[in-house]
Length: 425
Ligand code: ADP
Ligand code: ASP
Ligand code: MG
Image (cartoon, rainbow, N blue to C red):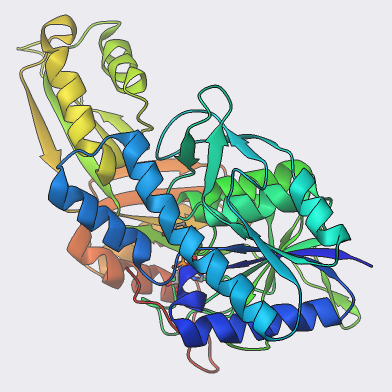
């Protein structure tokens, strides 16, 4: 008998009907002879609503209390799902992240999983239960406080449990039929990908394709857990994310030159204006940011004006960290030495991802041509071996994504991509 881990996202369990529909699907997997562990997210947009609520009582809620609040969302769905499964005549038990043995560090709101000790899950399975685990949460090893894993973190819970339980596969059920060549909400002609390597998926996820969370893919690659991303609303095969290409019929699916286009409008740009152009300046700026436990993304230093000896340094970071970063820099203003700070949250990032880039010299030129033909102005550029990213105005993002998608021949000539649920929030 195999063990499967299934994860259902918020859009799949948005209401009572959704929970009952998902319960039936879980019971099918159990009837097929599998041990089934289910990771579930909060219903619909519950997490966003809880954050809104917190901000109404406090503009900067304490991390510990925010985590305590947010984990309530997943507790609601796990209990309801267990009830729905029992109603179908099967045994089910729900567990919080802490009860399931998800041990994390103590960085509130974006904790990292450092160990998984799923003893209670094993016992529940041995007793014939379907185990339902609240996603996105854990307990900190040192302080024993409740933590959350960052937005979209239920994906990581699922893969971490799959690794700890030695599951055959981790199935991620969502509101689209798999991983597409672009977000189907933006590109109607996006094409479903049958197989994608961990490396390309990692870059897409890191570049904003929220269908899978970056950390979840990192985890899956480290423990070599195949992920099957598929819709909970259809019976179609989805996308396999794994180290080796899958077989389809008698043939092996080939690695695409370009896997897809990702976009991200969740970042902001901070420009540190008037920084002395001498060694150590960038170090002290980014040390300040690191000490505030903020991850940054792109960095650009402008050429300094020879007459002043001053330069500007810009970097991007999650909008949610903007306030904290500005406060930290202001506090260190005399130590670092700069004239002023500029904050811009009307930016967006577009990224082209594909392992074939390494060996196809025209890709960068074609990418910039597509953007210029679409009249999109570029503010920052960054690249890796298998990715090119640019920052533009936020309003230009949808048009830019579509232009690049078409230019690289990714448009599907068959049906439009289906989005079954969710609000896209
Ligand atoms: P869930 O509630 O299941 O966790 P998410 O909203 O986190 O769902 O992720 C699914 C969404 O990811 C889709 O509805 C889609 O809008 C978005 N998305 C972004 N990029 C892609 C992509 N390349 N392929 C598929 N979906 C994508
Ligand atoms: N409910 C959490 C969120 O909305 C975690 C998740 O859905 O994966 O971010
Ligand atoms: Mg998600």
